[in-house]
Length: 118
Image (cartoon, rainbow, N blue to C red):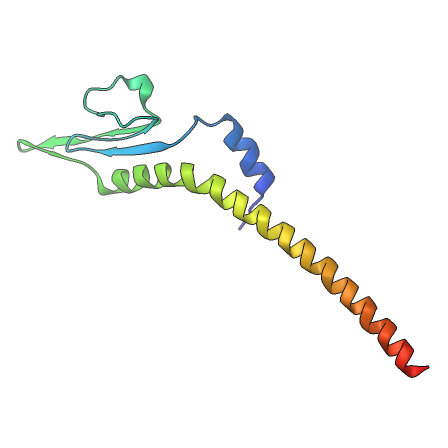
C-alpha cells in the first residue's frame, strides 16, 4: 500500500470542487453536491459531483445500497481529508520538536556524564 502523502493530497484538494459536499439519498436517486443540499430528482445534472439513478421495479423505486454508501463516503471525505492533513502536519511538527528536544537532552546527558567522570 502506498504511503499517504500530505503534499499530494493538498495538491489534489486545491483543484477539487469546494466543500462542504452533501449526500442526497432519495427513493429514486443518490447524489453528491457541493454547497446547499439539493434534490437529485429535480436538480440539473451539471450540479452533480456524483449521481446514480435508482431502478423502478414492480411499481417501486429502489437504490443500490453501495451507491448510497459511496455517496456518503464522498461527502465525508471532502470534509475529513483537509482535517486529516492538518492533523498529520501538526503531528509531524510535534514529532520534529520532540526529536530536537530529545537530541538536546542526549547532549546534556553526555556532558553531565563527562563532567562526573572527570
